Amino acid sequence: MTTVHSFEPVVDERSSVLVLGSMPGVPSLTVNEYYGNPRNYFWRVLYGLHELPVDEEYEARLAFALDHHVAIWDVLKSCTREGSLDANIRDEVVNDIPGLLRRYPNIRAIALNGTKAHDTFKRHFGKAKEVADVVCLKLPSTSPVPTKTMRNLDDRLNAWRVIEPYLQNPTNRI
Image 1: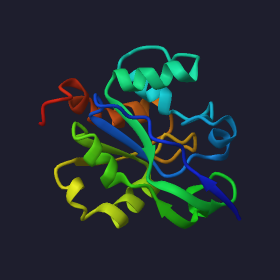
Image 2: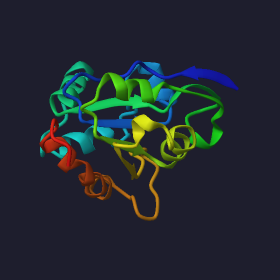
Image 3: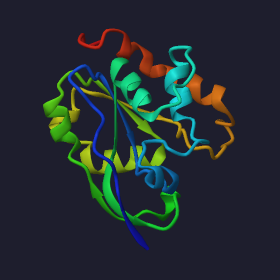
């Protein structure tokens, strides 16, 4: 098994929604980019919420996320894993998500990207006081692997629309 490490968070004081994945896959780690697998739906979903085409440059995509009040990080800081599948994750070490929420109090919703991110987050942080006032949303993975209910971009985009209210008035709690 290979030990892999997640990236630093992409976040600023304007962030109102924190998207948490589990751990970047091999293609993302190879190019050193969040959601760096060109088949992953994440960037198309994020831009699709605003009915805009995805920027080609990674730095422009990060700026777009921040400009639209979206922070990006992973539940896991490190783990051992062969390949990219969440099912292969072992020896989990979590990121300090409560600490991030203390530093960025405008975050009022956490979008958990997939079942592994959701389950790991709930197991480690479900009772953390910093999470008590934040809405936690379990969302379908933006992974390119189709499921019975998430077959394509439109399916994922429709499911991810639940974050829209948290983006519209980022400094006001709903």
